[in-house]
Amino acid sequence: MNKLRIKQVDAFTTQPHTGNPAGVVVDGDKLSDVHMQSIAREMALSETAFLLTSSKPGADVRIRWFTPTTEVPLCGHATVAAFHVLAEEGRLGMKQAGAYEFNVETASGVLPVSVEKGQGGATVMLGMRPGPLEKASQFKVDLLRVLNMTISEFDAALPLVRHDALYVPVRRLHSLFTMKPNPLAIANFLSARSLQGLCVYTLETIERESKVHSRFFDPNNGINEDPATGSAHVPLAAILHEHGVIGADGERCRFQAEQGDALGRRSRLSVELHLSGGKPSLVMVGGSAVTVLDGEMTLHEDPS
Image 1: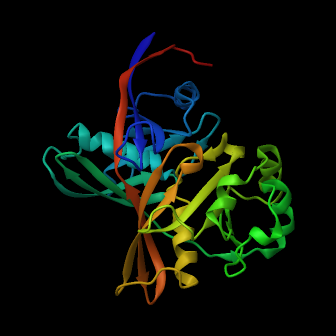
Image 2: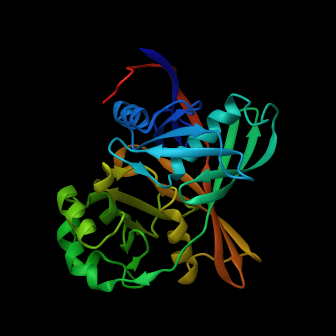
């Protein structure tokens, strides 16, 4: 049996036991796919990030992410957690406080990451490109059933939008907090329509400085509900801009997003929308994080 060093980090927060927890394995080069999946299953977190030596020119590090049941091509909160650990340990040259820029190799391409390291921690921002958005009003009747909502709770000023996930606007924060979603019904709904998740959001927020509050459901990847979903805020930022909810000072705008409060895992995400020719070209999503566990895991030679 071997020992593996692993950390658990709460992302999108500075307060332990809030935000979205992720596992982080910094030295992942010698681990097989079977080992990585076994470790993620043992951690039982929405994602565990494994850092590896990059295989692509121009990339500083490679990250793979595993849920308890499968590998996923992209994960925002576990990336924030991973670079928080790298900054905390002074890796990738981050021994001193300051601003750092990196390129990270992922299954979704080589993506930019910025880190602002201070004396009390680090702020990490991951860049992702928004894809095309498609209106999807035909799903409204099905959503009444899977979310146990009434038709009056939808926000008629904003459309249902399909990206990789489905984005569903509701009028009130109360509706978001009191809805009783059916995980099995959501899983079947998403599978039948080749959707990767369900994001329900409202423009009514807890904190005055926030622009949006959301909940995200992804039962087909072993996550009935995610406390904070960085990647989901990329299309969401584009939707909010397209419908005039957020403006831009020149070619970018920055706002705070809320998630996780309904689960008792208060999460606050910083979102920065970049525009080119008036259209979204890049969205940086991130925030702070805090390490809550630093230890060793025992690995069997054959986890299968």
